[in-house]
Length: 282
Length: 253
Image (tube, rainbow over all chains, first blue to last red; front, side, top):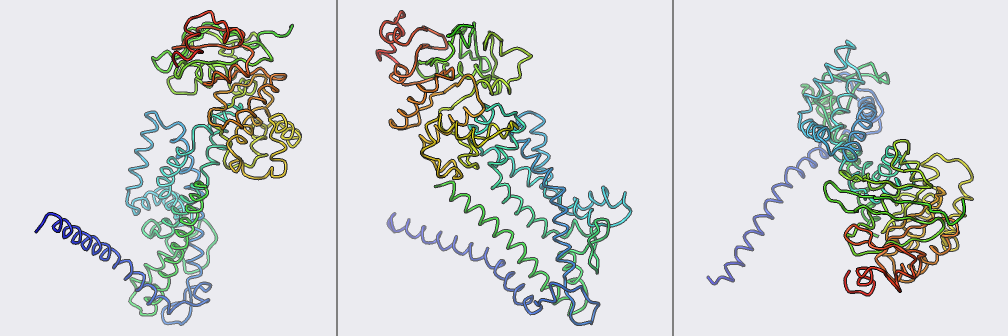
């Protein structure tokens, strides 16, 4: 074989092999989507979104409280995680060059690798044990703690992207450092930070483990932060491990709803990022 | 005090980045209500000297200064001087236009007032500053448009308007036209001419012709030292130092 045709052959083989790898990687994703949609779509109805769950055997019933509970938990998580995560990120970007800064950065890195169930145990110790009851607050703290390291690192990167010339422009106007950081630098990075927050929220909404022994579950509507709260993920878990056929059906449908929710958040984040980038290119 | 008094007096000023001494024992005076140009080859310390005049130099990690800078007779390096308040008296315009990208034209001009919590009629102040910066006629119909929608030359005049809004006494300009085309440059130079009736202006420039056109007195710096200082006409026609002559006749730099 001539060197040229040999190179062509190698090229063709590698193209086929890498293409195969893509197909293999896509198979689970497509299967997952197909399974969830085909099995879950049957149970979709307006009542499924608005009604309370029903006991075994009783027809109808929905996951209204779990859907609302997930939103409620994520809201509480934002209250906990946003100020700490974004604040830490701004600090790291503006003042994080010293030893203290690298210590925080290292901590955030380690934290983002901690299994989520461990974060759940921490929230259990921090909130559930002193309050002597499972509560939405505990679940919110658990999810909030999960969001912190992710938010801190992305915020830091986004704030560092803000040109130093803007910081100087503000300082040269006689604006104090802290106000420059908040009102000029953070304001400029805000578009990207909103995207990062959406991604963090999407991740938190999909977590089960940290909620198992913090927010627990609830068969009824709950708006009180000191009471146990239902969530989509824990509800899916409970339905899925049950021995009942109609609960299995509900697990699939609830999974589909969760998938749609998380997917919508991710798509919004992508859309925001893209419009921001195209604005920057103009 | 009788005009023209010395607005700024620099005495034996040295500026360092870490161990590197980039400004070496410079002594100079800057008269009030005049334009002072600082010229010299790249890396001669002229920008650093400028940044010492409103204490922006010290914001760089590892930077420090020795010697004194007096504004109206008072040492600005003193412990009783708040650099934040100093910078409201000594404004600055940078090499590249740097409007705040998230703000509209009008918000950029009033940024210094709003961020510093200064109350008053901001709209009137904005109009006055935009007029002073010779930008009003071009933007009066689209004040709410994003500042980054302006051209480079307009952005630079916007930055000048923004600096004027906090009513400084001194305006420092760090190569304000180096990123601009000739037409925009001419507009900014005209502006400098007009502004010196009300402000003391120090302009760092790479462009010798520009220094000759706009300034009343010129400082020539080389390797961190002030080589010569004098009326612009004398510096350009009859320099005392041979290094000055070599530089302005294009033998180096």
